[in-house]
Length: 425
Image (tube, rainbow, N blue to C red; front, side, top):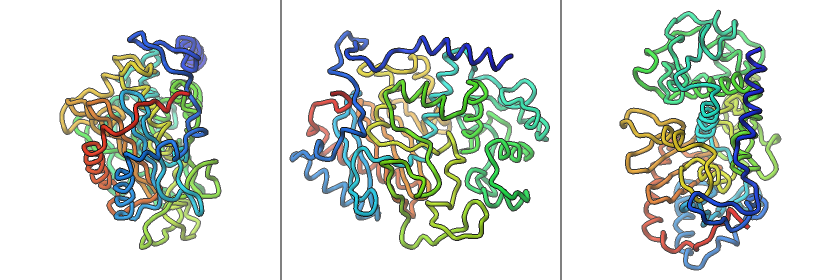
């Protein structure tokens, strides 16, 4: 009965959503958009961002890629919700140059998408950030989960705790989202555990700390949020996010990524690791040795913690739809934007974002084998997005060096970008 009620409420709330694909739209300042949103991946090419005044800009990016051994990368630059620049660098796949419309894994940048889905559900009154997640009164109150819980501290985990990495989960002994093979061996499983089974296994373990009292980065917490979205919306995670988040932003080509090269989506790049990164045991305990970026981890099992793929221009359009600026209408109300970007202190994660500073600078990073992603939103209204199809030995620390590159390029070339908006015809 509750599930039917939730579905009806969800359908009713859908009718309240703004119509985003219209011929002419007025923003909050009363001005008119220049046209209709375009299918970015179908129309953007490198030629549109071959700009003589930015020749030195291109050289510096290529030098950065050479230094870090990056096969390919995609860069988009947005200013005040206008896409000024979108370009691919290097190789997308063997014999294919990277173009701005190529799709790339974004790893933990996916968490920003999941957090937005949670905020949509809160705006519709279908959940609250203060709701508990587990136990008889929690959202995920399924009997199989409740029976698995041995540590009563689980009953105190809230939705907000999961969003802020304060759920009490630990990666000591291995991140459960990247330890599938070990979990299969320890639990004598013959097949890869699905999300429900993985949840059941984790819930039988004690928490590391009292929920809400401290933080430790947790991919598993965002898997739990993916299941919260499914339970509350009455539909699968990907369908809800596509229909009620991404399509509302005019993002047409986001997908949950797949594990192997053979399963790639049209336009998706090939992923690479460094030459000295030796093959690893396949995540499904098959006994095979595979490249770390193709079968080393169960990407499909990450769901909202890290599975999304997209182009950098479409990712920029998503950010433009949740940034509180009026030029492109947001899919969230101002209260939700404020909650997601509110600054507490340097030891408190923001909602979906890694870090939001009181100056208005927001950061979201993502890294695993075969990719490194950085979304940097600057207080002046600039947003720079850089995603690679190659991982480096620096791992997540590469984002620090990419940030330094952004700051250098902004200082040298920030005034040389053309005044235009590639989001529209």
